[in-house]
Length: 141
Image (cartoon, rainbow, N blue to C red; front, top):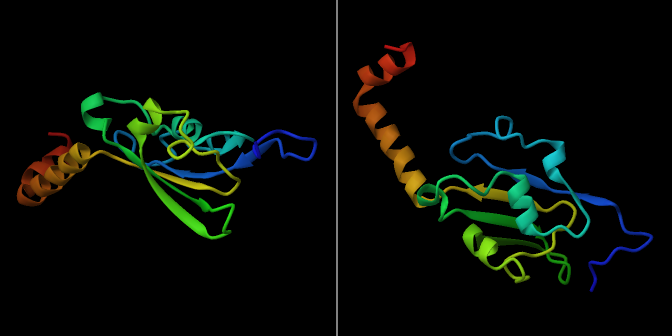
């Protein structure tokens, strides 16, 4: 009931979002820009996750993604961080504990699934143990 529009309600809020996840490893290529970080007043976490490209992709690789929401607890005024399973938010968008309303200045970070982390680790290890192959890939042979 506190999240309703009134004459003094700001038209929107600004959030901070980071999405260095596969397959896009940065905010610039992922099109995370001013449009993605300015949301209408009354937006929820799921809307920010969609805006920040934190959803979608292959089910096998991205089904276990999670997000961190960092913001100020409106009751205590203290900073608070919540780790939330992205799939749970999609399945239960009406649950306020999984899909809370956003406040101006909230920060959201998206993290890849364990499978993507294992894939990236194996690429690093193979690059270390096979420097010739890594050089060939860089040169284009």
